[in-house]
Length: 425
Ligand SMILES: Cc1ncc(COP(=O)(O)O)c(C=O)c1O
Image (tube, rainbow, N blue to C red):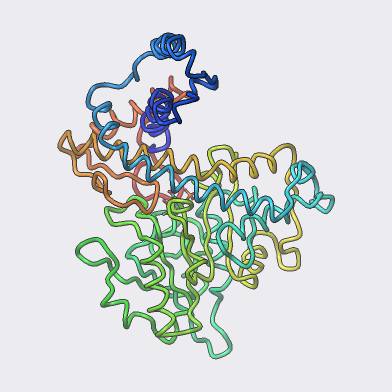
């Protein structure tokens, strides 16, 4: 949702104005107008042409409230542009360091043994970008939930010889909706949850202000806690999303209590929102989806797991089969090219989503709705929550967003049962 609104709002508006403000910022001898340079002697002619060019572009097609919000958000948009530049540079360097060439884009079929090196290269690029030892980026991950599940099942195993059961500890309150059945918190028609395998679960509730409960976290890790799960983004909960600095603080507290406690971060919707990623501050493993931030709206499917090599390989084994691991799996057709392309564009798409979130927050709070994050507040994921206060209003909002989409604008969305969710989606 923030993505579709952002490209119509913050992004397009910012571009249109940049075209006209640029000439004034350039040195006096040469002024640039839409790619053309003019000398001083041609100033009057340039001026005439400039006004013709300017009038050739219609005013931004926004309603006055949105236009006003766009204007007031210019400094915030500028900060987002800096973030995008920083993260794009990191991505570019990783592509160069891995020697990415067009030969890495070719597809392969069957077992994937005839892969021309693209699978490994994409893994290497991704690992460098997030500061991890190793990564698997695969179209065969159905979704974020699937990637997170492969990671959790990689190290949370049925009891050892002494029949001691391992424990999963969620440190940021309840986990994302679709993980309830994975963990076994909610009754499920499928079997094979962590609970079915004898893995117990506990959670540290959030503090009243919606942040991590730091006090409880100081003594939350027990002798059987094998893994602490940190959810970076708020998901659908009305809570604060976590900054990478918060994640670092939590990891330090967890490791102080039990150095061998694994820390796994659900990284969905958090990638590229800051200049750091959780493995850079000590997370053992992260997992997420390519149909969110790191797919850059180009990846048609897929997900990733990244972190310590041993655990990435164990997660790969859960995705494939013991013995097959990471060196397996075909990527037919042009999918690999799309994964590379999406990853490269991701910082920019995330920037657009953040601008869209800023705009929604500003406009909807002006209209009297409760929003989170607050207008102009710091952002740690690409989610913007708005309390619309009634089911009808929520449905109307969703319908309006759908009507604005380039694809499927004729579809009328209805709330309904969706696999993995207890609520209607
Ligand atoms: C924080 C968080 N974790 C996990 C997921 C699950 O990802 P997916 O829908 O790709 O399974 C989501 C989805 O929105 C999410 O927001």
